[in-house]
Length: 303
Image 1 (cartoon, helix red, strand yellow):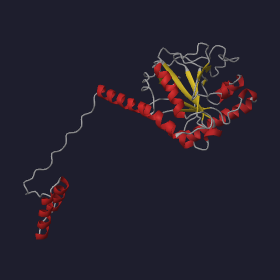
Image 2 (tube, helix red, strand yellow):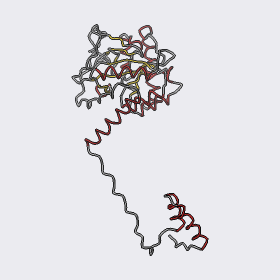
Image 3 (cartoon, rainbow, N blue to C red):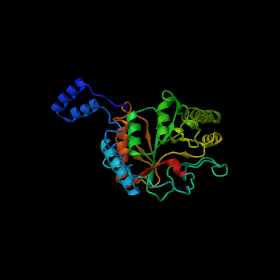
Image 4 (cartoon, helix red, strand yellow):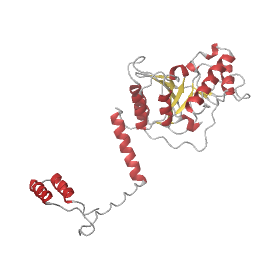
């Protein structure tokens, strides 16, 4: 830095500042006195040592603390459990007994199933339709690191594709739920194919990829549905074993309990349809599965 020569006016101002005292005054005085030149005799400030990378245990502890804080912020009883690593060997997915259609196996039709065969204590969260687009839901699930699969119907999502692009960007999967959410068995084969393949085209255009997973609206289908779905590139047709609402749960099984690998359904809905928000709905879901010792895993990791 160029040497600064102080004149009498500078010295008088400096003396006044020093007499005033205080850290801010001293800092200002130092600036007025000028930068130290190479002949000033002052040593340069010592460089800070680079921060050391945290070890695995420290990183894990830091992440657990972060999750605990996020759980408190969203009103959960405790932080959600971390799911195990995806299986190296995917389980064989077949149609649930009684849910098959004619030629299910020999035509290699997409299986309809409600539970994934696994010994891991996990369940899978799936969310249908796309009517409610709550930014707080996106923030909550992102902060908690809870994965989920969305099944989208175009007539409900077309007003805000960006919302679902953000969802995909956070690591969640977007799948096919038809263009208009019709009762498919009431349609002809051609009409069913238009609903399913038409949504495949929308998914590819808007989200970059045509999915291989499809959920028939209302869980209703027939042989034409699965034949049409296969022709559109669909390989799996999961439905659900439990459904969670903002104020209660519903079960397919008579014993009214969760099982390993169960697929849980909820919907993109808010106060217009429910007595609560999607955040309230997720709080009910996460508190129950965590209390019962289940982690939430990503469905596609097992397919």
